[in-house]
Length: 183
Image (cartoon, rainbow, N blue to C red; front, side, top):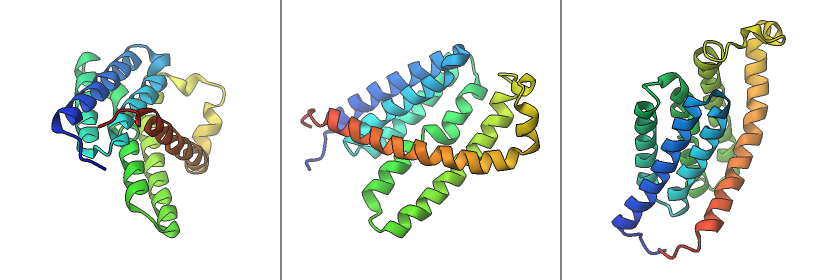
């Protein structure tokens, strides 16, 4: 595959950064759109990865986080879960798909990413969900509080297995969609 020009990498990364920053900013202003903003930003960050532009992806991630942080009124609480996990997960999946060829290593990387996801969800629970959304008034909160680590590590890992598989499929669909760009 022919190496893309620097101008193409910058343009594609800038587009990705802009879409991700807008999605994160809108998500931080409108509480019920926060997760949709994360998902749209993740899709936007998959665009440079479809052309194997890892540096462009990482720069788009950094730019999107900084722009969203400043445009949302320095709301680190809303951007923190994206910084901790969701923004870097596409790059980890890309590296796994590109460099890992043996099946046992895929399982070891899955376990590592699952632990990373669970710890990020713990951070999100303690910093975002309880203080901002006020879920301590929900009827299911006492049960989850009592069995928090079981719910987090068992339920979170099962959710992550589905999420990780779906993100691999989404990256494949982004790859197929952007294959028509001839650079």
